[in-house]
Image (cartoon, rainbow over all chains, first blue to last red; front, side, top):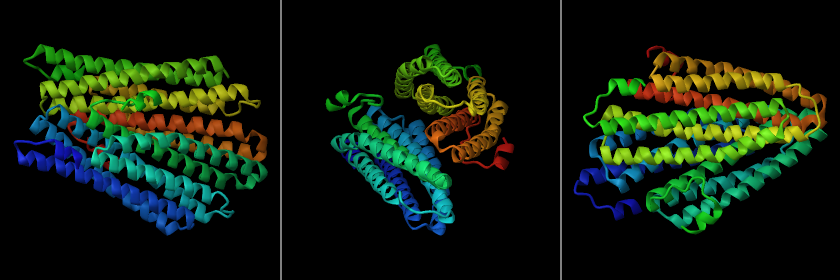
Length: 234
Length: 234
């Protein structure tokens, strides 16, 4: 963990506490990644049972968020961390909010998978959906890696994927609209596809947020709302 | 401001700093409320010009978020606030994230208003959309008021509106689907309506978040993910 390497604290207990929130946040990140994967598999397999597993496990994601958040606030209050450590703790607090919301999107996708499993219809758009899903899952994994290693280049790489995800989402949207216009009976099913695609697109947005927090704690710069040209200067 | 009344600091400068972030956050809240109102008016009036105004002003919302956030972090680092004050500052930091995202939703609604103004078609769902819009706008206003006054009852009231908003959203969704199935040429327009309704529903969700932060800083309890029964005990 890059952060731990660059920081040397008089209190080794404080060091341990920082390492703990770091590793708990990453554990939460891995759980969310698994939730996303299971939700995508539930769609691909038209598997209502798998979808319900995602919905049940979302409670665990929520519990992790609250526990980590509490630890962060306790550390700030007790240790009164200096600028660099404070930035790191705040970055973790932000990251877990995004992870929790990604978990909600995975749960939404699972709900739709459970719907789709019950609805009659063809699976024409599943391939595109899985492709988009694999893309945002890679963004999530890379953003977590960038956060773990304090790797600014990897984080900037994640940010550059966002436009591609937007284009894939737009393309699914256009195709699905055509599909609906040709066969109005397919509209309810098509809307589930569109909603799943939008949830995936939002997960991509939140992976970008995590990449931004990594840059923030390493560089001390808040790059939210920065232009692509400003990103080049990092 | 309830917070300022219950806290008495040796440093009057610290008091001023807390008041400043409080009033800046509320100013940001009012701007977001105006953005939402303008976006709804743009839809109702099929007014592309008004929609562009919302899109331009979103930059100001983003700037306010970054400025307030910076102030909060500086205060935590310099003043090493005790538990109650720290909770308040963290509540502000969370609130401005939600306000900024609400601003994004208002911008999305404005984009769709600009689209809708260009598309041929009837405005059958505008009345329902405006009704939902007025509802979530009231939730936003009440959540800001609850935050300002540290009013837990008002905050719990906002949380109870959420189910009603969900039902209104579901009703718009059902009607719009029927409408699409009857007239497939109306599908692109209908999807703009559905997206606007979903953005409004999300703004309602975020108003609930702000109500939760108000309860958090007053009561010291994190009630995210609590059940309705648990809320009754507040």
